[in-house]
Amino acid sequence: MLQSLQDALYNWLSIKVVTEARPDDLAAQETEKMFYDMLINDFQLSNIEWEKDEMMYYVYFDQQNERKKQQFPRE
Image (cartoon, rainbow, N blue to C red; front, side, top):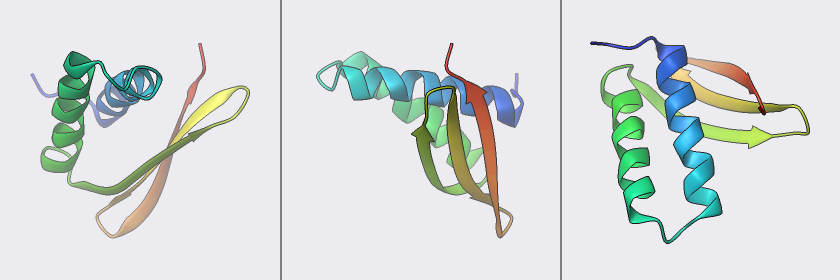
């Protein structure tokens, strides 16, 4: 089942936050790579970056030669 881009970004970001907090967690790294590969291969994204502030996470990416942004609450 193909997920929406928003779901795929959220899943990748969620596990990415875990890998940043626990760099020695190999299972988390493998899961993050799986979701990252999905973003690259299934959704044709590139230049994926993320940042956070007090309220939100922001994910920036290129898709079809256009820079885009998605945001998620930090809950």
